[in-house]
Length: 406
Image 1 (cartoon, rainbow, N blue to C red):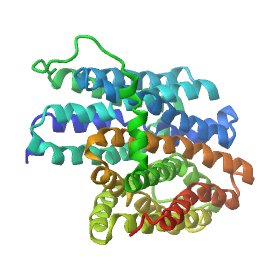
Image 2 (image 1 turned 90 degrees about the vertical axis):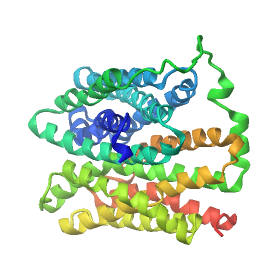
Image 3 (image 1 turned 30 degrees about the vertical axis):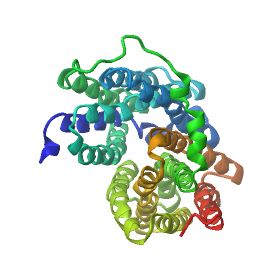
């Protein structure tokens, strides 16, 4: 297979390493909450600060890939990710220091994920690009799933500091792979001088054109609410499993962190197969079906807290599948509906809005947990899950009234 040749296997391995610290905070959330006396809102804000770092840096990181070899940006991003994780492992001791370290870690992902894609595309021939890129994007789910599993293993072996210290090896390995195994591009004339053009980094005029397109704006708004629900769920799922076990007294057959990782893997085929179904019944119709179903599973999962472990596990898998079942469809819908003249700006806005939703989700979830009562109360968790799935339901109602769904 051509996918096994060239730089692609190296970049797939590098991406797994770069994402190894992704779920470290979700795994240690309950531990840090107890040790530092954090409220649920503060716990959610620390998770959200990861996406703050991502959103702040990603416009610059992606714009600079047109002016220099993306390999250089990737190395810088790996260094940021290493710094953020080691900062959490050695320096963080309260809410504010944790927010700073997590933001640095998120900025590291911003300078590795899309630049990593650019490393691949710059070194591939035109006919090969699509297949290699599909593998690269699918490995995001593989990397985040492994992050839960490995973080949980390390946490079981020592205190929470060791999770971040050991997982910093992930982006370190990524840095070494790209530095030693991916050759610099010398046959391309890059800019002798880096020029920061704010209109290129924040193309507001083009973004306005994108949002005026009824189809494109619908896919972008849908992706925003999809990401809000997705990243909120990923941030709080381990805590949900731990508290559910405490309430029922019944242990799962796997550790909570390993379960979260395994469940996360279901999202990879769900996204791919969901896109195939969307092509048969219509993208907009499929997105609406998935968002409503995901909302039902989310609330049902919260209601199952303290019940039989098999029921909780089944609902958690169902929720994970339907959260991701419209992910590829939303992105593919935007790519095919956007005006070719401004497609790059459309994709940039799509990514920015998506991770903006990821920024809001964990904080909203924690805020509602605080507002609705005790963290050990099932009603509070129902309210918290409802607060993140309701946006998809409102999106469906709004878009159907506007005639987006044909």
